[in-house]
Length: 115
Image 1 (tube, rainbow, N blue to C red):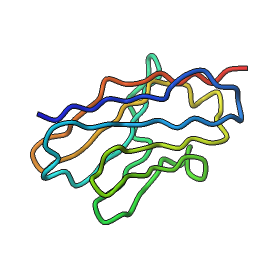
Image 2 (cartoon, rainbow, N blue to C red):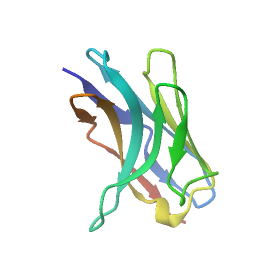
Image 3 (tube, helix red, strand yellow):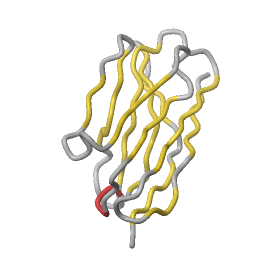
């Protein structure tokens, strides 16, 4: 079984930075993509950033240029570097990984951007 655990969330002022981490346990064989979602109360869970096995990555327009997704050769840990944070970035952030058979989810970490 694959388990994902996020960490690194917290309270930060607008304009500040955070780095989220995602550690995976279990067999990662067959994983071809990894990414981060976020969800604010009363809103849909939206894809923020996604990276593929070939190294290509894409980002939601709202975070492009501010967030960067990265990984190591074993695909864990995975990171989301968040810079120039805005109030609207406040959400629970979830780590996710895709295999051909299943999408895996972490339980989330809270990011609060407030002055």
